Length: 368
Image (tube, rainbow, N blue to C red; front, side):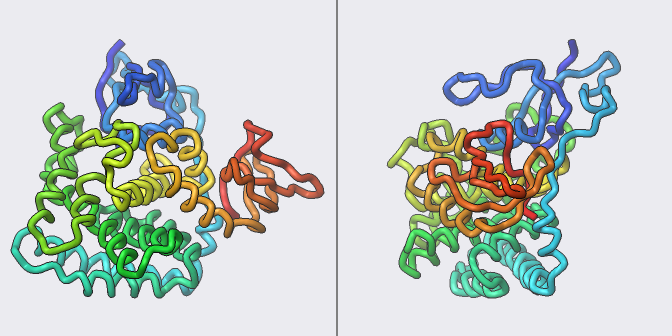
């Protein structure tokens, strides 16, 4: 059997694994011979898997089980976001977002190449202008989700994470000064990626082991770019620590628990949420309930439970009374959340009330 190594970003449903994928402790995440699906790919992204070995046929082509069987790969569309994209509010939000993204790109490029002082007031004011185009925090999340369907550049991702961090800070009742600092933590968390050679970032072929190691150095590079700047130490730590995990499975220092700065823990949650709800070449943005399922299954040993619980309780409380579609095609209304299983609320379909926590074969696929 022929095999080839591919980037995680190149993985699509239907590819067949040619080697077990292990987590940091040596536990098998996905076994050899497994056919990739949207959910499996999202799980691997959640664990920050960078590459994988997949099967090839005798002609040297990557095997795709869906193509071979003439099946369509699974997909999820979110009609809730489609409705929002057609509103005047979203058009105004999108215009403000793009204006900020363009200015932010020019500004950060200048920061990286010169000693120009960081104008934090300008950045915070620009963030607040974008936030001002939404009615409330959940409406803001919907707007961000729509933007992620269009643009996934490093600059846009940093703005997304900063907006999420701003809301997060308000939810945990931080002072305004700390909310501002947390917002800046999100804005600068991935600045190190801008130091990675474009030949690596944009390389269409598989990366060498040295190139993989270079990619993971963006945390160290980001810290180096910020360490001598006259800014809050938590902003510098967020650039360094946002890929650390409570169980020590992260990088670059394999820190555990309280060794990780609290603001870095928050940025880590916002960063992964943004990644999982962003559009990819192989799928539409994941429904927030699908993202929550992943966090509930995999996340509480890696991310601070105190922050996770607040984040998802606040977010999903607003979805009560929303109409949703389940994976079996049925549609209903969310009646009540299950505090011990937020991703599995009670849904009314016709005259029947279904507790999704007791039906493990059913889950919310889209918000309508």
